[in-house]
Length: 52
Image (cartoon, rainbow, N blue to C red; front, side, top):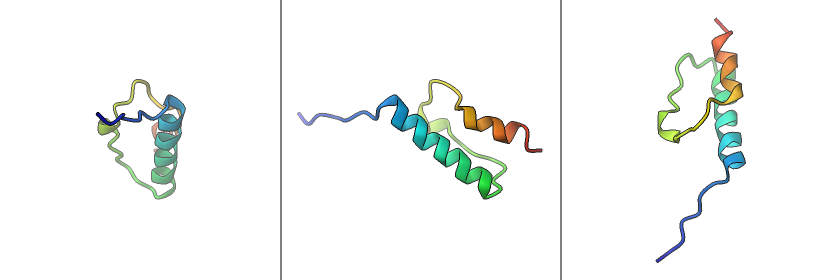
């Protein structure tokens, strides 16, 4: 049976933070992170909370 590599928490968090930052830079007003199975809210999301 092949081993499944799970991303380290830091790797997953960093990827999510980069995705949020890119969306912010592009002016995205809606970002769906529901399929990322996050266990905590990334700090970068606060940029969206205060941008309006």
